[in-house]
Image 1 (cartoon, helix red, strand yellow):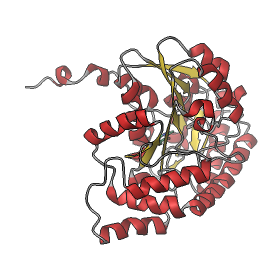
Image 2 (tube, helix red, strand yellow; image 1 turned 60 degrees about the horizontal axis):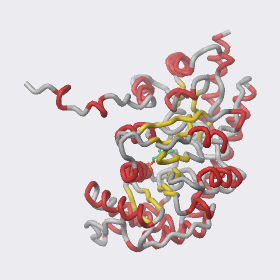
Image 3 (cartoon, helix red, strand yellow; image 1 turned 60 degrees about the vertical axis):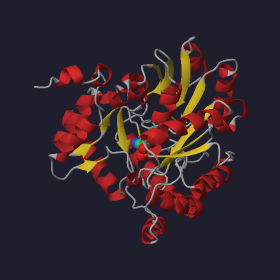
Image 4 (cartoon, rainbow, N blue to C red; image 1 turned 90 degrees about the vertical axis):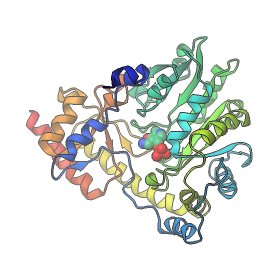
Length: 389
Ligand code: PMP
């Protein structure tokens, strides 16, 4: 009989599973659950984008595309990045179409990390950065961001985290789970810190379109950071296209070239139907994004007001579609709060600890759900808090 323990790679076995999944498994067994857990838009992909995917099938576009993605799609991404974020990338040499932002992140880590290289990761943040670093034999260096700094990374914190082994700085803004964003001044201060180093900035900008009140600024907008920045972005969140599995990388040619090579061997090319739909999204999707963003913004204000009325202290999120209320006042740990709220009131939220040790004392609440569900969830959370007294 085969000994699976002996064949499986230790490095992979040692990585704990995502702390998000456990709550979905509990919720899946229950009735009448309002899930504020999953980080996925509740909208359907706009029809004109779906149509473009469907027509591509009707026309028989069912083959591989060029490894880096359809030429037309890379042209559309390049136009879009310039139009929306004032970022300039050459479609032929600086863009790569990937299987979601997820593949983009994986490629970025795989192309730069050697054994023991350190990656600075502001925490709390999305669940994949530390495992992807560890899979490459690298070392995640978590830097706790603080509520009093609006969960932004500060230049002093960055400076203090740098060692001779630092290879990359991961910038997860707009942030999942806190909703924090960075300002241009923050990025300029980072540029001064990174100036004489060889540190690469990997900027996860999957929520770049979802900011409220302030337009997104990318590290690549800072001239001194452009040459060292790899931008990861995608279609999942902005266009409500999670299932299409499409994203892209924009960055300096020497890095994109190596990532394209790896993508060619591991993936071949991103899904063809999705790429045709994505051209439509890039060329004609700006108003869809604006409409969804307005809707999220209304929900954001409503939920923030609701949490504050219930007595929770809550940082006002400026981006993405998450809220990160502090639950210290309940006397419960994040895990206990989330588990009891789910079992007793059938509302799913994610304990802050799923996003790193800095998440203790908080829960992540996703407001990509209808106003009606948000209202019901708030009433149930109120009942839960009453029951604790
Ligand atoms: N980055 C962040 C911060 C995310 O929240 C997610 C999805 N939850 C991703 C990347 C990956 O998105 P996708 O692969 O669907 O593009």
